[in-house]
Image (tube, rainbow, N blue to C red; front, top):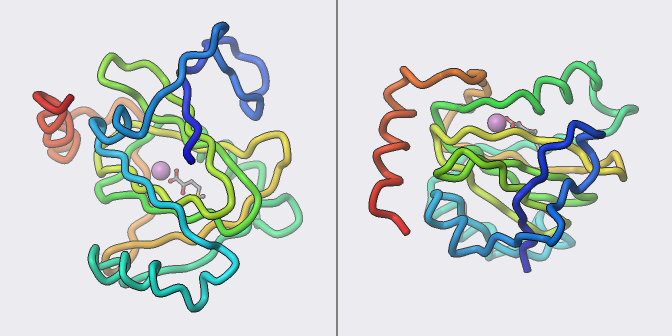
Length: 179
Ligand code: KMT
Ligand code: NI
């Protein structure tokens, strides 16, 4: 259902998979120990999907909008993609639901190694507040994603190092004893 792996550290094109040889997969359980959660939904019915409604209700995801990431649709495309790929954290959870296309989210594990999470149509993911992460398109250069938020959205990203934030310290503390 979800495809994730440890990344190599070559600095070739960020849009390539960057798998290790041999591949070192990462499971959903591994991701859960980092506070990353995942649902599979039917993106073809996102406008009326009762499962999506239930998740939004259960988690208080009152806000949503849709972002299409493609060079012809996203203003300041190059600049934004560059920003998204800078290692950063947020003070709130980052919740994304892929409605079309595909993309990668990279997250740091407990030993500070990069895990690449491949998201396809129908994949919904939450990254916990305080986790270091980054985002990139893959070689198809297109994705359409729903962005969800608890209450009024705050998109502010803090690039690493951002270790002094209380939310970062809380996140790091939450990792101890999980998995
Ligand atoms: C972020 O903060 O990492 C993003 O918003 C990524 C792009 S949204 C699919
Ligand atoms: Ni982010």
